[in-house]
Amino acid sequence: MKLRKISPSILDVKKEDMVNYVNTLIDWGVTNVHYDVMDGEFVPNTALEFNKIKEIAQNCKTHQMDIHLMVSDVFKYYQMYKELNAILTFHYEAFKDKETEIKKLIELAKKDHVKLGLAINPDTEIKVLYPYLKNLDLVLIMSVFPGKGGQVFIETSYEKVRKIKQYITNHNLKTIIQIDGGVKKHNIKSCFDAGINLAVVGSYLVKNFSKETVDDLLS
Image 1 (cartoon, rainbow, N blue to C red):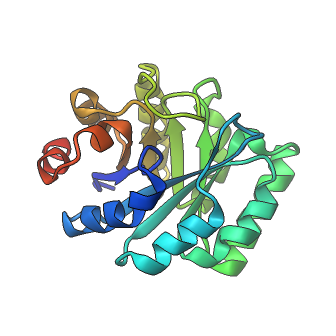
Image 2 (tube, rainbow, N blue to C red; image 1 turned 135 degrees about the horizontal axis):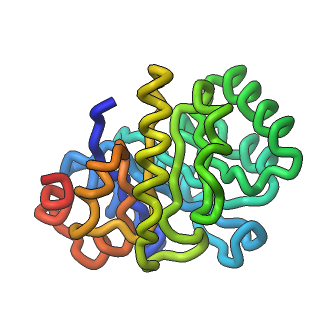
């Protein structure tokens, strides 16, 4: 898959500005937007309640909502968010009985026609995702530890991307590879070259918010 896009995160955008921010991005040609949900348990912080994301969905132009759920109670949040016609990405680390629970989630997503993703933290080996890839729409490689914006990109993330890209290619899969954390102008090309399809861009774009920045990130 040669898709190369950005998925801007609105984590650092003021809540009252979020609808306008997303609509402006869409006007500039952005088709994916990244929504961070934090429960205060899986990660210490909280961010973006369901009602706010639903409000954005109802008041923004059509786009692919890409919801990154940093939560401990996976199935509770799945039931809450499944109505939004979004890609729902949960953390591998959040599952207790991993194999059983991940298979259960995959079955639910298939039944409900929900697009599903799995994310891994920087200290989790990439190979844990391999058994599930054929049933996933997206995999998310965290290039920082989840929970807050503005962190520095972890360089070992490139090798993880290369490994999973090779696996996806070898098995003729269509799973989208996404990276999230510390992505800026100086390293986004290296991320794409390593094999990602979707780059989450957060604080860098918020601080340099212009169509020129969007175009520059993809040039």
